[in-house]
Length: 245
Image 1 (spheres, rainbow, N blue to C red):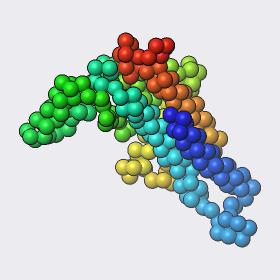
Image 2 (image 1 turned 180 degrees about the vertical axis):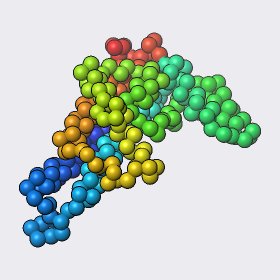
Image 3 (image 1 turned 120 degrees about the horizontal axis):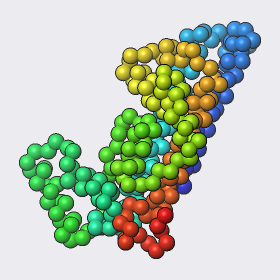
């Protein structure tokens, strides 16, 4: 998780650097016609809006990569601790069964038998878990993050002010992460152009959106880290002494 925390900060720094660029561009617009260099081509309003819209994609990328790494860290903890299925908490064991038996995958009769047999062998021989993956959503916002943590039975204790900030409507009666997800989907599906997406927004508002998102995600990372350190992926009686929260 420490490596991931650094990755999170590195990606955030990229967004901050991009916002600095947009802020410089916005100042040039206020002073006159913005140009690339002193005598270069002018930057049109359309181009400015396209540049602004990219912030939403960067922020969504940060959201998805953050949650993906958090969930994968849980899987890695199960494998690294040489856990057997009987050691796992009910929630995590359920996810392991889903993964091993491939219950949510379309299978023919033989593949279904192979999956069931593999599950049976693991349980009969009490083998340690060597591979594990948790099915994840492809549309992340704060509600989905709460859902995945609840599904895994892990604590997600977000500061009330941070939670209020992420859920408070930013635009279109949507909280910060819901708004980012909505625009990202509209861009991905082609129902909204990049120029349309970047219309009517200021760098100050984009910074506010990034700030709310960052505060929330940083706490999500801390919560997952604390849950893993406390071995919440194990049954209480299987946790190391002093690991309970």
